[in-house]
Length: 147
Image (cartoon, rainbow, N blue to C red; front, side, top):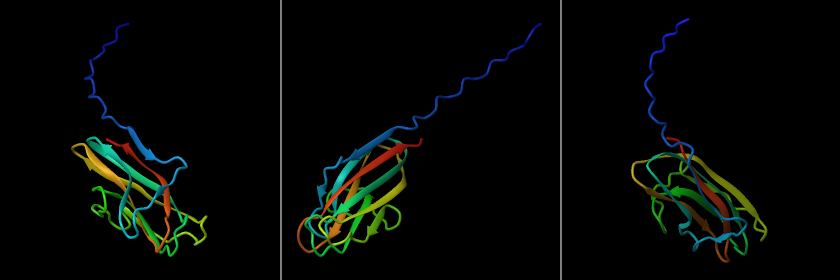
C-alpha cells in the first residue's frame, strides 16, 4: 500500500516564554527609608518582551511609632521617586499593622503587565509614614516573561 506524505513547513520557533526573575529577602528585613520618602527595596532588569511583574511584602512595625500608612509599588525610577506608580494598578496604599513592636501587615501588587522593547530596570518601591523609630520590610519582586 502506498501512502502519500506532503511536506509541512517547519513552524517558527516559539518566543522565549517562561523566563523567571526574582529579588527577595529571606527572613532578613530591610529598613524603610526616612518617613514619607520612597526607597528601593530591590530591582530587576527585564529584557525585551511582555512580562507579568508581582511585588509582595510584609511591613513590620519594629521600633516605629506613629505609623499611619505604608505604600508598595512597581516603579520606573530609582531613589525617592513615584515615577510609574499608579494607585490600584502599580501601587498599593495600605493600613499600618498594629502599633505593637511585633505588628505585621502584608500587601501585594499582582501581575502588572510590562511590555519592554529594550532592557529596562524596574524597581520595587516602598514608603512608610511614621513619627519615630524604624519600620522594616521584607518581600519579593518577581517577573515572568509571557512573550
